[in-house]
Amino acid sequence: MTTEIIGFIGLGHMGAPMAANLVRAGYSVCGFDLSEAARAQAQADGVRIAIDVQQAVQNATIIITMLPAGKHVISVWKELMALAAPDTLLIDCSTIDVENARKAHQMAAEHRLLSIDAPVSGGVVGAGAGTLTFMAGGEKAAFERAAPVLAAMGRRIVHCGDTGAGQAAKICNNMILGISMIGVCEAFALGEKLGLSQQALFDVASTSSGQCWALTTNCPVPGPVPASPANRDYQPGFAASLMLKDLKLAQAAAASAGATTPLGAQAAQLYNLFNAIGCGNEDFSGIIRMLRGKENKQ
Ligand code: NAD
Image 1 (cartoon, rainbow, N blue to C red):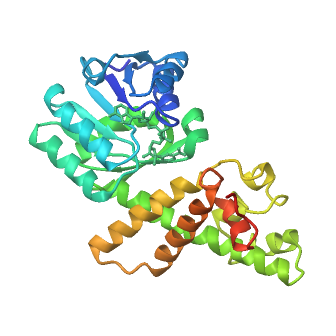
Image 2: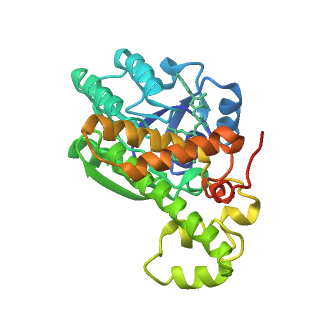
């Protein structure tokens, strides 16, 4: 039985079910969120709730953060620097910019704390089912200590390299996903104009060189893949607003690293437009309707 005691900050759509899975795995977990609704949901799922960050991490040997963006992580981690005992392991599972991820690691190292960045893929469904993929960055010792805890919330855990490597892997992967989804949508829109049935295009492309996750798992037209959000009027799924967030992070990273990512830039612009016309809450595959010139929610 593990002796690790976990403080969990950020009990939103992802954090609450992740914390609940840790409780199910036998960990002692105490959580905090600024939102009352989030606290109530986590409590209903079996998570012990604290009145503030300080109480949540009081006896913690491992502290997990699952927050919206880099500025929230830096602000909470600054608070943690004064609260965490030496050798406490900090794990940030949020998706944030590489620069702030590295800054957070540096703060932790200066305070003799271990740290890893460990963003996830798999969404709310994966968080609930405990089937997330974790992409981790940080020192080997920190990763090895985190691994059993991550395994209680996920199915696949990859050590991607040094500090920030988890965030780098996450935004590179999601840049591929954003670009490939737009490619699949354009192909269906073109096929329709050419009188090709959606099923015929799917049958060919899904077993040919056009094969990709955006086509075979998250197919943007209803029918060929019954579980894809297109069959539920594009209810997420993976919200387009989150895809836009990740594409913007990729563009910021590309600018600071001097990488040339013209298709990533184009994908960010198209998802920006899709959000601007009021579709940010749709699954990101819903962009096919905009590409056909049919979607406008305002
Ligand atoms: P969310 O907005 O539902 O949850 C974030 C929570 O953080 C909120 O409940 C908010 O009240 C809380 N919070 C903010 N500042 C705080 C503070 N100072 N102290 C305590 N709590 C604070 O977001 P989410 O969907 O759970 O996503 C969390 C992270 O995971 C994001 O970085 C997101 O990009 C990433 N992510 C989300 C998904 C998804 O499908 N939702 C998938 C992969 C990755």
